[in-house]
Amino acid sequence: MKIVISGKGGSGKSTITSLLAMDLIDRGYRVLVIDTDESNYGLEALLGIAYSQELMDHLGGKKAVGEKMKAAFSKGANEPAIPIFDKSWSIDEIPKECLSTKGSLGLLQIGKVKHFGEGCACPMGGLSRDFLKNLRLGPKDIAIIDTEAGVEHLGRGVAKGADLVMAVLDPSFESIRLSGKIREMAEEAGKSAYFILNKVEDDAAERMMKALDPKEIIAVIPRNKEIERLGLDGKPLGPNVDGVSDITTFVLRSMPGA
Image 1 (cartoon, rainbow, N blue to C red):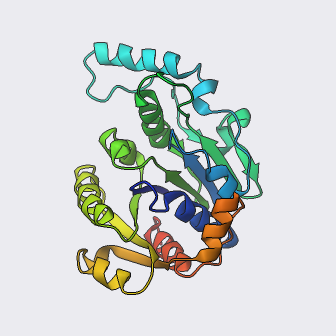
Image 2 (image 1 turned 120 degrees about the horizontal axis):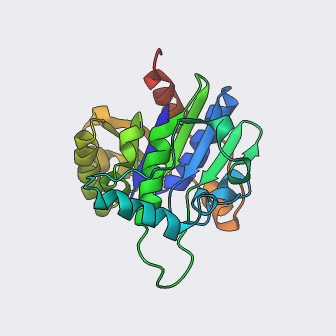
């Protein structure tokens, strides 16, 4: 099972990714978290695990990967594949220097923007798409893909290799508007989009639900001051948060053969 986590900036994508990963591990699954957000440097703290070498750097760096994409473009490809994956990869076949592990948790980062004026993050998007498409999982393996803010990853086809698209929505007009675009782009990819209402309090959940199809909402996560404190301090999160089990139950029911 491969799950893409989408949403606007600040909605809580990395928080939900971390909480879901911890809950799945508690239920006996091996979880690979794939960090495809080129500008967020905080996911490893929420998971309580250190980053290893970026996959982008392992493959020669952003420039080298970008040149391979340009070469594919020159041959007329609409979605230029990066000619790196000559076979599918299991979690155990990911280069050890690129994979941080802690028990049943693995963390892989695709690549980060590091310098002023270095250019667009297109190579990161292409690498994320091709890696996810070629990732081979076992029956007790689940991959969770934490994406950048917005919908660029959907525009670059990252969801093509995923089984589920889940969007995290905070109580804001921007999130509600973005949910429609995420739904539309997921459908173009042949996927259904589902929504997690996050950081809600008072009557926010009820008001948000009026703008969404109830069948698409899989969980409501109340605003949690302890989670906010841990996030501010850069401390790892635990699985015991109201609503997270609803996400996990949905994921397990959606798995092939469930």
